[in-house]
Image (cartoon, rainbow, N blue to C red):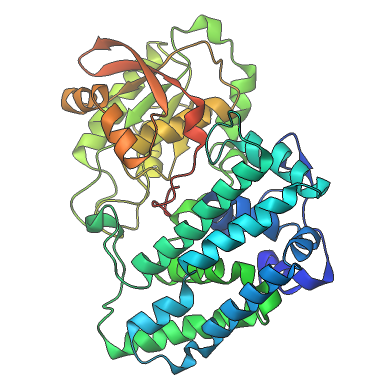
Length: 414
């Protein structure tokens, strides 16, 4: 049993799991499941990790009654004979979402511990938007509404077979029309009940169901290779602190990938050529670091992580040292190539006043130059600002703090 599940079961004992300092949790997630939860549902994760506080918040009569009713609906789904019955039991109802978010967030007034959690961790994370004039209550309610809705989205897509944003690469792994699939959903139900045995813990019931559905679909991509700064990115992360950035025109070079179309192919011809382009720029001292961005995307459910395969190519074929290579093994689209690299720029100690650059094919950079509308449409914000185009295949960019915002309908890379 993982640490996160033990803490769910111990919820009513009032054991506090984490401490908050300067907007960051001091302890990293305990394992892959923790990473999936933290990245997708950060506000709910904070409550999960402070069980004593959560016990207080759920003790009000209105919340307690709602959670017990929600638990009964889930438990009674053992009588379900069709898919819609299971989905109804697994998801939050709209009225429940609104009531819970309002009842919990309204407790920021008069509960200093909750108010401090929101102000020192949630709002500083910028995970639900850059705080402007919002109060702690308003920001927490917005965050919880997003979390509960995002959990329902996972249930619909990876439990019910609803089409995701990119069906070709992100669809459910099962035929939902098969009778055997209903038995699988009942197995999910039984497993969740082992971790959520009473209504007192059912604030986390839909979340745990969503996590189980992602797991059985082999879609814990958000957790792969984490924590990056102590694993794949350790050498480069430490090198950032020792680098004299004034000796380089740019802080880093992001190389966009080109996913293979042939199953079993680790790296595509386009990926090789773009990696070569990056190596040339590195050895010409255009930037001291190369970021390789690309997850386990093409073709559908490939075993290969694009960023890892391009890193191998850069090191083994082109001779780029590992301490100069950072990877983002999560991005699934060009929009998130830029967003995730912006997060690296903001989190790893890169100079904020210096441009980075991105390289790819001419057609790909043409698309990047005109990608702001797509970012707004798919992410809800633009996570970068562009500078000048310095060649057909290279353009400047800077990170913006909007990059921290969670994308609630992309659970594989939120």
